[in-house]
Length: 174
Image 1 (cartoon, rainbow, N blue to C red):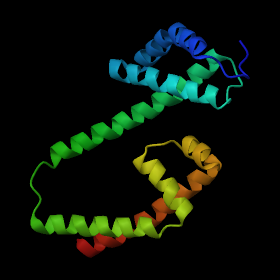
Image 2 (cartoon, rainbow, N blue to C red):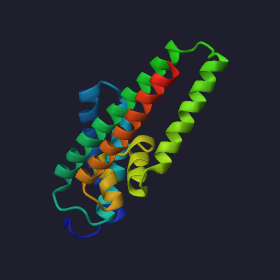
Image 3 (cartoon, rainbow, N blue to C red):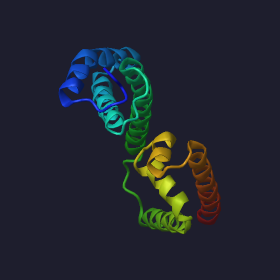
């Protein structure tokens, strides 16, 4: 099968049938989580389909599958870790906030939104894709047709500004 041409749906289904269990086993062996393994399989084959559809397939399917599987698995594990951290934080902070705490949080959120809105458009776009769409630097770079290093620089500059803002606000409020 030539990897330089688009493949048919039937061919893709054959690839899926041949490899989905191996991708699942790979993810399961790394995480011991059936949820993460299933999610990995779904995302890997969606990305593979998109790569084939966009004619980005330049290597053998097996090599591409496991390269995609590795990066996808890392992304999912990071997402899960963030989700678990947020759940843990919620459990610790299930107390009802006081009106003054609510006011401080509202003020902090308004300042945060104001600073993000003042960022140059490209930096704001990169920052939002990273933080709210949970995209990797590589995915952002591909979407915006820029280099991953440019994405990294935009994120670093955005975080630098936000860090200064938070340090200022912490001193102001506390």
